[in-house]
Length: 83
Image (cartoon, rainbow, N blue to C red):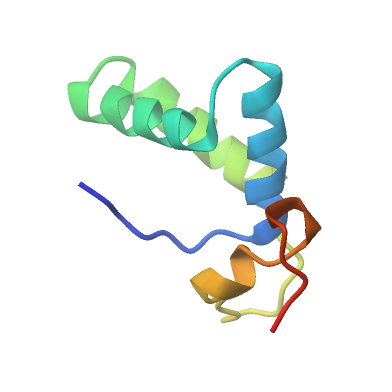
């Protein structure tokens, strides 16, 4: 199943880097985290870790800012420079 999430571009970039350094992918990090939550194992710890990460990686965008999928995937690291 596919889902769409709204996440600050800098957060996505930071997690992609972290994932690459740990031999995994952004998709795998999110998938594994959601599976951990769904299984109930260490639910409180997982939620606390996620909340801590969300706070520490909070973006600097104005409140209510939304990015389109196209906005997020633009840039030299994706081979595009904008439209």
